[in-house]
Length: 157
Image 1 (cartoon, rainbow, N blue to C red):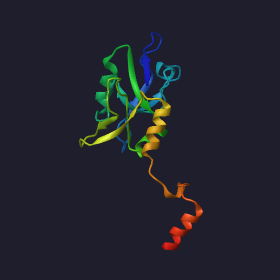
Image 2: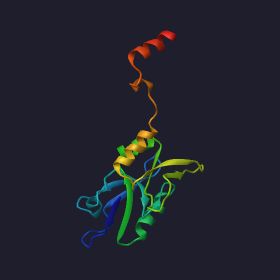
Image 3: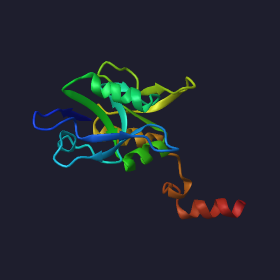
Image 4: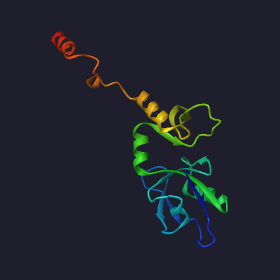
């Protein structure tokens, strides 16, 4: 979460917003050195997930710019870096900031199907446990079967 405040000594927030061809969403372009955006931790290539608490996944460039400009002196951006974005997409996890009042860890996509959501209000330990629970069973890594049992199973084939 980047909470960016405008400074009296700097015009604007100090970053460009752009879309990439073939990739949905809005991304952070150039971040000006010494800008409020840089001070807030915004980095070039970050994907913007939410603006001021509103998910912008289905919005175009103009709509996102309007959301950022809606608050004259500050904006809150939920962003994810390219590595994190790739990881969560490969694990089918939707990145979203959930309110404390939320009772579920799921979101609905365009088709109305529920998708797993990343609850940013959980601890790292809880997140690791949640991801471990989703991990698929790998019989090659199952050490509960000793070598003799494995040998017998292979002999039966």
